[in-house]
Length: 181
Image 1 (cartoon, one colour):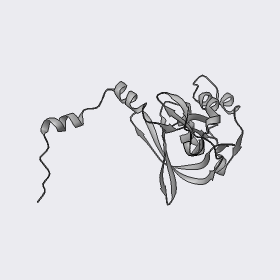
Image 2 (cartoon, rainbow, N blue to C red; image 1 turned 135 degrees about the vertical axis):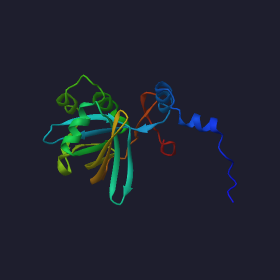
Image 3 (cartoon, rainbow, N blue to C red; image 1 turned 60 degrees about the vertical axis):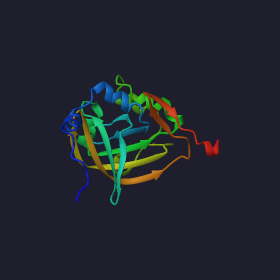
């Protein structure tokens, strides 16, 4: 016998309502996230942007999810190239994170910052990143205003042992390791 109470119809209606976009964005600003540069290079060109919506999916096969605004220049180029990289930034990369988030810069201007090399499939990898992944697109779906990109990892490298850069309350912050301070 199930001892769960029957749901209140009014509570069900409240669960179906969406919060206002502003309230959602404000709440999400409180969720700290690692900062990455997602980049691509290939027949459609080179592009990159700063992102926090990156997470692992599985280690068998190794895979990641990246969420990109569908209207960004990078999203269309990444989709066409089918290859991308995820470069996890250290605290020392705050200027680079800001640089790759500036919408008025050309892609050549963006990639003039940092030391880049071609990884598996030509994915642009950033020297000095905390972690670097070259990734092949295996699925791409639009959800609301964003593309959810599922990628199979072609290569993964642990990089520098440094303090990570995080994004919290609409600004870049350094996460300090108090055990080693």
